[in-house]
Length: 450
Image (cartoon, rainbow, N blue to C red; front, side, top):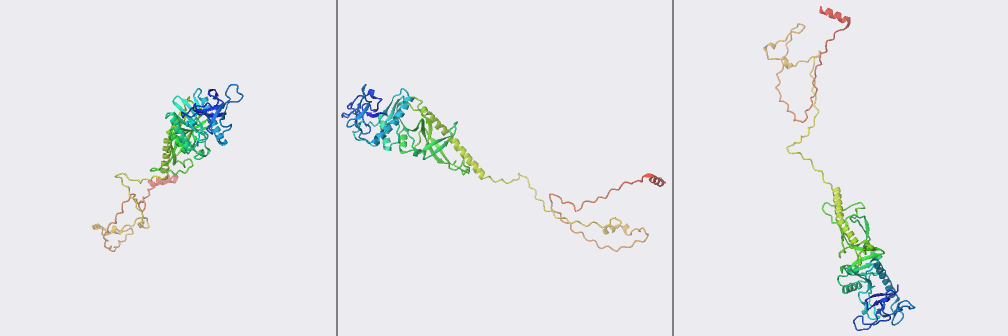
């Protein structure tokens, strides 16, 4: 990198060597700011003094360079000169990459604040490196590439200067460097865009300067090598439990499901909790000549919005399922159909006391009942003689008959009849006559027939 200076006549930053073919040698004094004061054409950006351009003629023994009018050395501090040189180098590197991506496009370095009116030796605080101005088909594109983010006052001055110089239709784009402290604060977020694989996006907490750029209609991006990070809004919230929902998941995969988020795009909303960063290659972003294309990043953001409602429904469905598992419904009671009576339970059966059997005579016959021997018929006064021929003995008079007692109460009806005390006795069937067999049997049958 050579020397850089502010060209009051052209209103842009020039580089030596590189732009000397269109420049005038020496101080080249003139009234460049319409103030009536003659000043040199070239100004040092570190100390605001006039510069002398030397050794630009063909055949010069030295390389083209600038020299201060008052002395050989710049009166600004070495630290300030070093910071300006580093800032300019970062901007020039991005300018060269854009020239390679957009061949034939008009790209130049500029200072929208017009420091040519600055008094020599008086350096304004909050200075910023030059911007890259691209003449695009839809109007100028002003590109900022600060090595580190300036203070909020410097950012506001640059925003107002760009708007005043290039109009409200100019696009103002900021490519920031990654701040390790800012990137390590919020961590990452797991995303699953529609029809794409899972990925982890870095999230950052926006600063006051970045919010001011978004509020002014500008674009904030992070440039890391060949990768560009495009922000979108992340709005964190907690699912409010609804009726019959239980969010107390015990497994590790769903333990954090009650905390969720929604997206705001293409620009982050002012009330976003944090910013998520969608990765995009610089080649994709510069695919359209002299204009930045964010189609890939915006398509990715739309896919994230498409899946967020499905994610919410899935989590609420699992919460309802967990509630149903932890709170089962009671078993309904069995109700008889109309007109159907449930039979009463059978009463407890008591052991029946068996009655003694009737007495029998020695011969095995039944003993007649005494009451059956007395009869009211006239012919029943005397008993027939027995086998021995002895007269029958007169029997003593029977006691008066006992009046019949009240019939026993009928047992209560039961569903199952009680079994009888004893099973009924059935006399054995007579055996068929057995005839003797053999010779003796034949003789007996002959003798008997006689």
